[in-house]
Image (cartoon, rainbow, N blue to C red; front, side, top):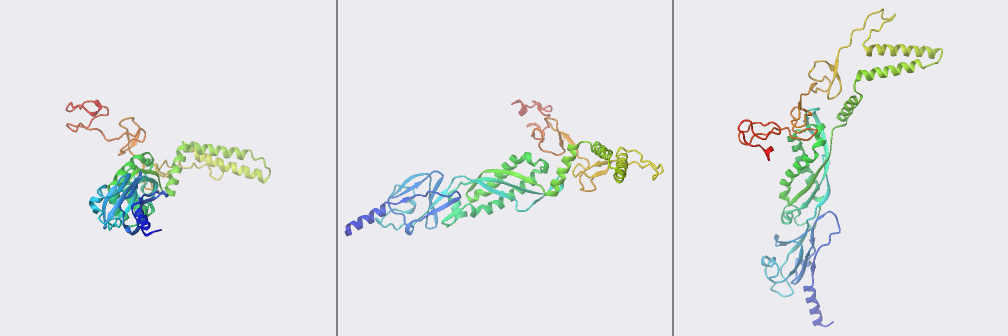
Length: 389
């Protein structure tokens, strides 16, 4: 090859250069294109695909951001040249610039969760610890700000590099939202969507400074400790049985039937009779009858004191007490009707657990008088309400 051919080939090599990035991963947020000597050659082709942005960094500062499209880098043909300067030296460009490709697609299936329980005060269980987990989706909303605040001069940046910091911010916002909403633990499941939207708005206020945006946020589960869950299960079981006294009578009758069917002789018969007498004594106690016999000499058993089960833990308490002797919970919970469907709600509830209606009463926009549900005119000043719309 002659010297002329070598020069010609060198010229072609200088002119023919394609700057592009084909992402083969699922979690790369930023990729620095390997430019030889950091020199962008005159006539180079820049290809930016959908869900990408190309950021040129010149002398340590962001010079320009390119949206999806095809660009030819030559004198006066691209916006970046007005900032980087003209190409004055033929094939040997003295302009050094770094090219970063930023992935602007949505990164889905990101996970979050509480590493330790959150301590809260609950209307049903008093002080309770909650754990929660879920998922979210995010994207790079401002490539320039993302490079300045997060990625820096890294050649590559994955979601794992920032996931820990994002999780800590999310858990902080979740804890704050749960504390502000004051939703009872037993009603959290019906408010997952509302909680998620509130947290997403709060998180985006902070993530905006990173050049990031949370597009979706999900609360998948909020759980209580095992001992509290056991108390909830026990309470549910008692509710399924209905009247506890009737259930005990049924169990005693079954035991007496089994004892009567025991046909074993001798010791077996004696054991059967003993079991029968024992069950009979149990039935007498259950039915509130007097247990008479040779040992008791006809003395009447004192009637058992009336007890009421705790609505929180199921522990029997003496009738009339205000707080449970076992868990400290209130024995009587005030109930108020829903303003729309009439369902019984806990006093202070913000939303109806049956129809989801907000329990805050509407007010007249003119005189702030509290309006009855469905009122079309204010009874105080006659102003039309929103219900007339």
